[in-house]
Image: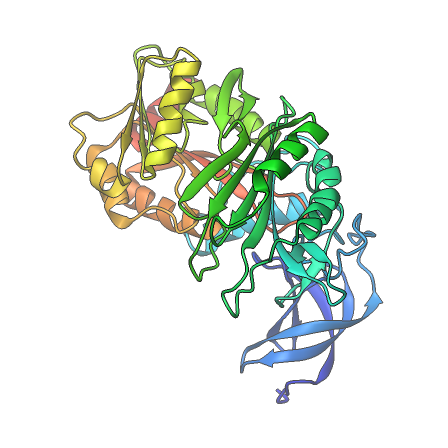
Length: 464
């Protein structure tokens, strides 16, 4: 094998897509990762980061385009870091996402031929996002900019509209920047930790059309914010609330812990699965409402919940999944580490007259082992890092008959399923990927898991 050098130009055929969204090719039996490519492309690549067995390259020339390659919908798609896959046909995005789940389950989980369904799509591949949070900066001409950072940099790509966001955000995005500029409010500088406004946040109820506008600030010193907030409410009929969220830390986190409503209401109303939810500016709520609803329908039909059942939602948030499912069981319990989310969940239960739910503040790691009952169904929806070992160990000890694992990262899902299914205690009956983030490499998946003795019994009864 020849040595390869940083800066060298090589010709590569892209044969796959990685779980981070880069194209994957091989050159002399060594792997090359190339952003902005797709399976089937033949490309000229400049090597920018070289290791003995793999390298990262930059696309220099498209020698032969793949049949999966399309013209992006967005004029700044080649610069903006908000989307990775606008150059890939949506049909192939779904194929790649299913493959990503299968490969993780086979490679990390050790599952041969895992039962992975085609990817669930709840609606359109553009205009789907119900939430947008834009960093702000000043251009070299002195104008306020909002947008996303350029790929691999901290350079802001200014946007006046964005094709993946709900189109009802677009008028606000352009005009609010102009208002901030007219007010003379100082934008935050993260290097010097000076200025005030860090981010512009927009959130919409897809069904109700209600919009929240939030400015994330270093401190509360925005002279004239009350008058400006009232002006925004008057100008935009769908805008129901304007808030400030304070984040005074040197951090990459967007939201701080304190939010003040300046005018209107501190929440928007949304209809989800036939229920009404109150959603705050920093509440976790799936960004693709329609796909979340479609996935909930699959969970309900797959579980076939009984009126006598006890359901545990172990990472319940504001009750987005707990409350619709609670209507079909005897008792539902929700665990959630954030007290503010628990308050919202309790409020959402009250709004919908759902009285058979108990929400408890705390970590799953502490609360699950101390439960004095074994639920009939455990719903897991952990963060990207997956479940802690103590959670897996406790489930193997308590042996709830059914587990539903909602995952936002295929590799940690595979790792955790391997633990659950070791020694044949549990069996996977179905895995349903879902596309919550079209135009990106991100894929979610729901695994349906049953105690193996129940699974074998159900298979035997079907044969009879």
